[in-house]
Image (tube, rainbow, N blue to C red; front, top):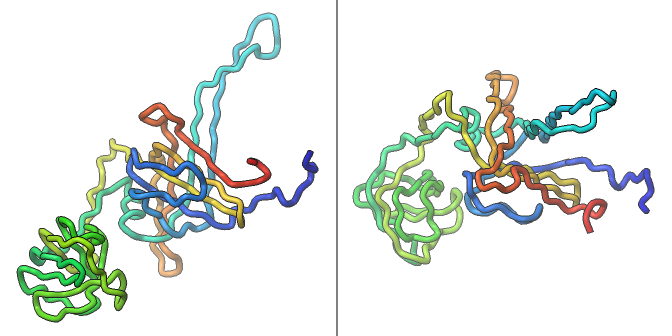
Length: 269
């Protein structure tokens, strides 16, 4: 039997990560496998998270006893609060209640993408310079290029050709499959928000990871809903952050609303 007082069993969640995905996204079945396609990490948080379990019951009393003879569960609400510190399309959309974000950049023209060389040939003069951020629209083929991902102009040999890298001055991206694009844009950062109707509540999946050295735990909320939106302070003396609360709802397919996986020799075997 383990000793009652054991300092090695005191846990301090020194770091962690929070991930978000659309409902129905495939989830990992442990606390160490990275979430797969569909999950996006929400970035820096101010200091961890708070998990709250509000369990309500109703007592059944009888004439013949002072103590209740039974207890009936009436409600269970599991909620999680955290404060996000990064501002991007994922955190900003969530902070506005699940708003859809539309980039306002104008398409330059159609394009073909050559295999191996990675040369992008546009239908019109592209007007781009080395280092400019770039995104494709309506891609067919052209693996590994992906719509919605920002790339950077590596070279611009002519007014209608260019090559791309994943970072400014990075390595050439050479497609394994030739492809076409219905459009491409220079990323300017201009955007607009489509804020959802007040009567609608955004539902999504959430993964919260925390770790203490080799100890780890993963909490998966299979159907999360926002129950509070952030009060945001805009000040030259503070960074912008988004404090919010989500609640675990009953899953649509009847599986558990919250799943927990971990690695901890004091708990598992």
